[in-house]
Picture 1 (cartoon, rainbow, N blue to C red):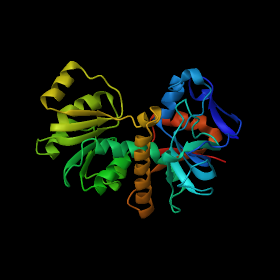
Picture 2: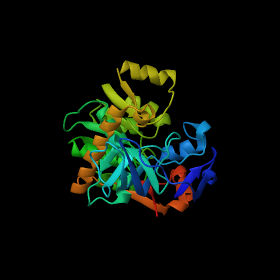
Picture 3: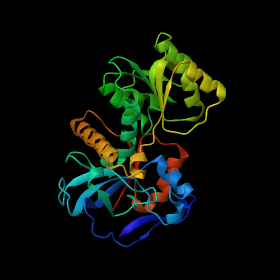
Picture 4: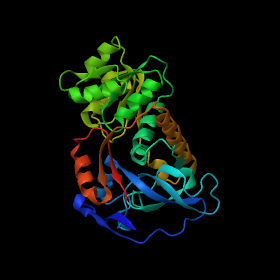
Length: 333
């Protein structure tokens, strides 16, 4: 089969479009899936640069998000049959092969059924960002309808889904975006208030929008100084979810402590890395809920650009540049 293989840690040129052996027959409780599309996420280029989480096991096939059709069901599979349209988040971080290939093997508990009116491209764009957005919003528990939530980078791959989910939950979404084009996209996705951090101080703006009380939940998709300064925009006993690792200075940590903040680090690959089947199944239920929302029109995923699988290097260079708004997807022959 055709696949993209990472043979060493490095830049996009470390990705080789080549022929590799077909996967074996799926073991008990697993499916062989013929892939039609694979999502490209920031974690992919980070894994490429690091040589994956398991550099001693190179070469590897990257790609955590995929969509396609069931080719073969292994023994004991109950929920699926050959020909079913499915999508999932599995593999691609160095231990199991990922989705940059024509075929892959997926555990049944990680596989979600794909409605007929949702395309493979949209489905492949969905898993990592929608689970990330969903879990980031859920970490603080259920906010009351009408409460404000601040979502950084609301035009990004995670941010635009978080805005829609917050809107669907009856929350009052505030977002930080740069430029009028991204602001228009964020409004379309449900943002009620736009803060351009190049034109105003986002902390003061968030306080002004909450009558000086601060925001009970902040979803940080940027990291760095935006994350550490978010403590000052949070309400007393508020929550800050972040997707990135940042050691804030002592002064910022002291401010977070004075406000009794809860800080939540979100790494949605953890259940897969630890092979926790209960949590993997829970994340799959999120995918199934999101797919139903897309099928009904309550949620949409923004596709920034698609590339054929053989153009994976170009796709990686683009997502690593940071000049994207929405998702990049590889289409698979």
